[in-house]
Amino acid sequence: MSDVQSTPDSANATETLIREQIAKHPVLLYMKGTPQFPQCGFSARAIEALSQIGRPFAYVNILENPEIRATLPRIANWPTFPQLWVNGELIGGSDIVLDMFQKGELKPLIEEHSPAQQA
Image (tube, rainbow, N blue to C red; front, side):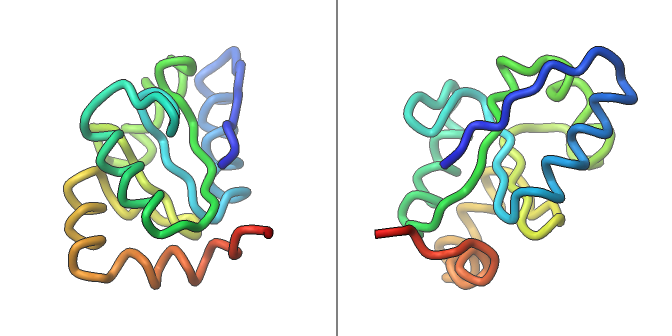
């Protein structure tokens, strides 16, 4: 897991930063808190599903990035967090992530786009 940090100073810079983050990280979770210390139950459930798959993913703590927290819902046309992005596409929030995980649909998607952990 890697924490994606930012300090953009304008809405345009924030939008550019978000698009760069999404393009750079094949599996990216915008969440409240960190994987070690999620700050809401929805983020915790998304982390639990991703952790059980066991592949690396990047994350952005939107609580430390208020510009991203304000801008991403407009870009994504998705109002809530967490938001899971895979291969540049919004997968959805906690409910969708959990539903896909329980149906066995999330694991192959993540495995296709995230390299195996290094030993």
